[in-house]
Image (cartoon, rainbow, N blue to C red; front, side):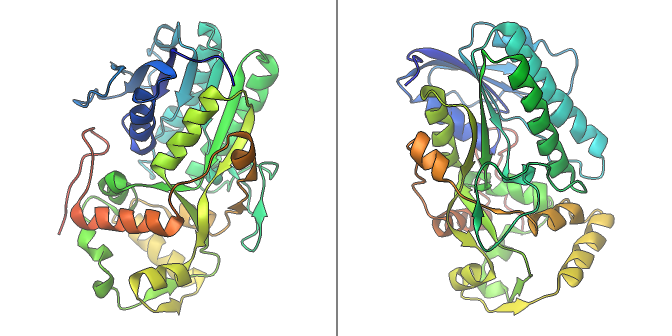
Length: 342
């Protein structure tokens, strides 16, 4: 175990889906002395041992060195998913903002950097077996999300060579859900006016079964626990994070008591592309292409080296999330604000 009792931790993106879980967990953690949450908008939420600072990573005027000075660790979670029609804008926040974070970590003398990478950083891989952290991380170049996650992986390769004194941990979680993230994720991927009650099983005549649509899920709180363990365990490198079982149309059909019906990839993609082109759907067809190609991840390294185990199955995670969709669930931060439509 590393000596981090009473440590000061800075969390970027502290008011989002993952950030709220990480901040809450650290605020209750006896090994953490204080938490500084960075976000564009300071919330009313006031967990113990936590202070807030308004910072926009897309701005070159952000003084991250001052924010990080005196910290024992930085957890970098900040990420912008939209606007998907303006990839230059998300690049400024995600890639250039990420590079600013890494440079400031080194300039401020922070000893530990925990970075939120993603399954989306991985190159296309198998759906019938699981891959470990050595699988290539070149992403799917046509999707901005994957391209940006992969670029930061290469940036960290150089950063680690130049700063061997800094302990760098890369988390590569599967798709992250919790009840409180339902409204935010509906807005990000389905649009502001997609009715949450459409998640009710009785309103689904059938469930599209698209070849390649087999992915992994994880509860956001379980991901947060892996971040906490990484702070207090002397580890480096990448960790896959996911819960069992893998999610496909058969599993969802059983959950929703709905019949899966095979649908060609081209038909599904054409529908998504048309809706995206008309700006009716925020999620791009390029991200859909990437999801169909993501590998399934082997999480043995996190189990063995972090002593981490998810507390919820993927089925339980999705059941909780769907309930949150129906109820317009949210949390007391600007990104996570709840809203029920329909």
